[in-house]
Length: 122
Image (cartoon, rainbow, N blue to C red):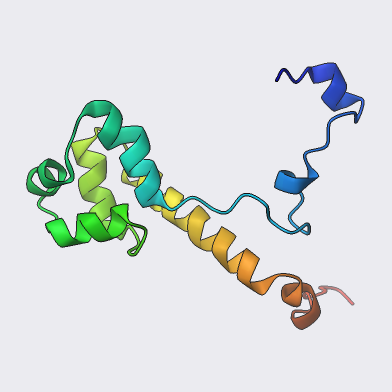
């Protein structure tokens, strides 16, 4: 499928199912552990065992992260950042976005009903 810029600009392409936060989410958030496995470990041929050994992170923690059962902590982010020669903030950012998306999905439209924005100057 090819999406042309002029079709997007003309409104002929509808991304509301993935871009509209008020619409029911159709694409679930991706856990950072899945990205760690599919974008880093698998392409580089790194086993979870090797990652655990080379980062000093317990194998059980790596397994829980990869299965989506555990979050990436600041400690783990620092270790992953050093191991992959990238920023720890990348890993924490993935986790933060995942957590926010899940919370947004769980709250649904309750957030608009339950929280009144502060109006300054009135």
